[in-house]
Length: 93
Image (tube, rainbow, N blue to C red; front, side, top):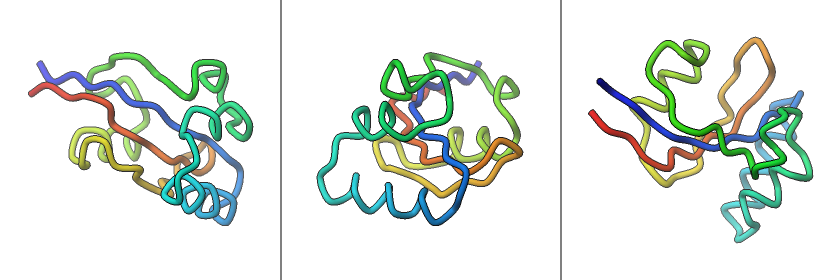
């Protein structure tokens, strides 16, 4: 069964999401940015969501996590909750 682990940052606007992605790509620490800006309770853990299987997250999130490049900051990804930056930390097929 497929499984993945990821961390994410959830914000209200695409503009903020894009700005935070640029900061991370410029060297800012993903976990520190998550703790400061994310609207998700996972921010306490630097955005870490733990291990999950397909179908446990919303469809748009799942599509990125189970097809995207591991270790790269992906997004903005729009879901019903807002805009996410996602970093896939591991995935098994």
